[in-house]
Length: 151
Image (cartoon, rainbow, N blue to C red; front, side, top):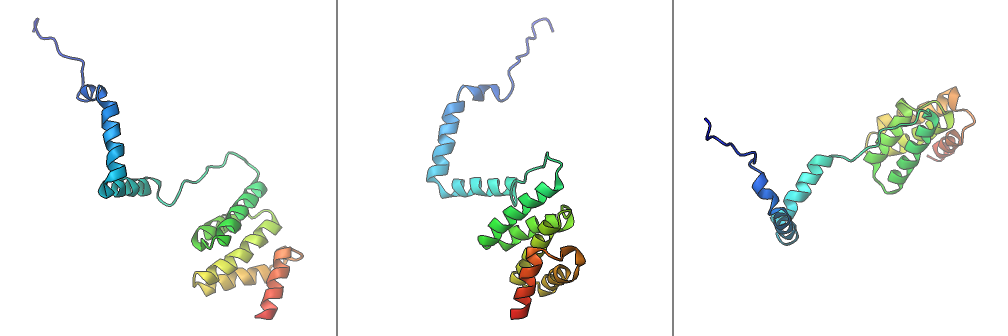
């Protein structure tokens, strides 16, 4: 055992000397090989999934409602109804302390569920907006009433 001198080098140590060359080859493969490019795209889609979502560090639930509604309106305008639905559902279920923001979320949820073919859920949102006393006097209730008369 006196002559035994084990190396501290691990299996990846030899790779460090050629790291830049390996990176350059990988980048070249992704640029020039559709299979490699597809593999990278697939990996990114699996790693990120449906998106990267912020975790709030603020405590103001009314402000969170404003932010979710603003993002929901942007997604709605881009006709990303499934994405918008989640933003408005956050307001409906969790950040519903501000009656105007809650009414806005219900208004858009009504429209979104109709667009997604779930008329029953759309009707529930519409009826809640029109019949719940909490939303009396809000702009969104007035819009819903006006649109309900024309239908």
